[in-house]
Length: 168
Image 1: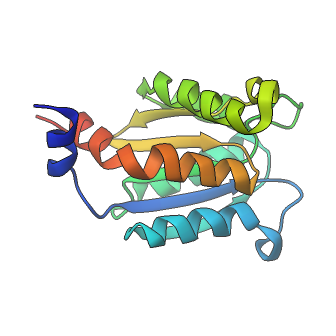
Image 2 (image 1 turned 45 degrees about the vertical axis):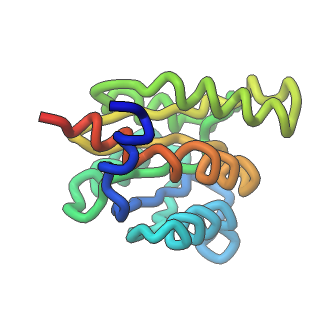
């Protein structure tokens, strides 16, 4: 089957669990979390969150495990903590919980980001993976990066990704 045929068979409505990782944001100024929620809703999907957690490995893991355990969540998207500052620990927290990595996501995100911000795109540790039949995406904390990833990569392909990952 072609990629288009696979996409046609993919689920159309998914549950998105959203997590914002930040020591400086509050629910009132979590623009990236609201952006994620709005884009997922606009795509016709269900949304849980966004949940706001500190830049702390244990807090991030607890929040991710809660979202993964939610029976209506198929996709977990985390925004924030994917850079190189000492407080950017999202990838470090999440990577050990992933069963498979989706290397192409980070690669494509950085290519698309390069078109917007130039060489600064290499400073992102955006990543994705699969665990327990669910997709997990790690995005930078900026609304522009969230929009880019959701519109160009996640929303167009996550159903296809999950249908492949869940094949018997």
